[in-house]
Amino acid sequence: MPEFVLDQGSPEAARAFQGLDAFTQGYIECLFFTDEERLCEEGKRDMPAVVINRATMESRFEGGDSFGFADLAPVALASIVADCQRFQAVNRALLDQAAELVPGSTELRYAREALDDRRLGQLFWYARNGHGVAFTDDGNAACLKALQEACGWRTPFQQTDSYVGDDGLVYLA
Image 1: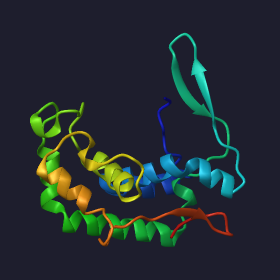
Image 2: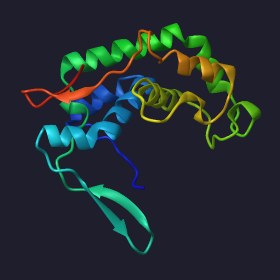
Image 3: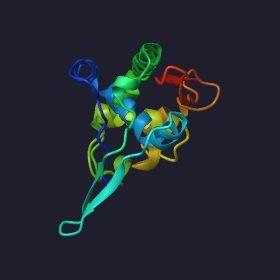
């Protein structure tokens, strides 16, 4: 599978993205990773093609007119930042515990890498929006179970969907 690299857009947009905390960056990366195809269809843009180097069997995306960070409507970015800050504040102790788990240990037995802030932000997007990836996929630690439950129905962190507005920018519903 090709590596997904978020298009950050203009130099100004890239600086704005780099100014976000790693948790929020991971969350935004997964928003575009999971929703890219649908956003391109809605926005009538061509999807990037997958190009495979047969000698190395490495793959990459090439061409197309993908959506990226610079395409987020300011109101959507503000909502994302607020949600990520709120999720981190409410669940700080659990996130800290998750970051301390050791890959290969009983609590994080399936993980190859430690859970850093970027990965935890990615897991927040996946878990919140039912993408089949959960905080508990890599282990069964109590903190991971509690983080997964924090994204369930009847919580402030229920599912959110992205869509292309009439102005061509990406919004959240």
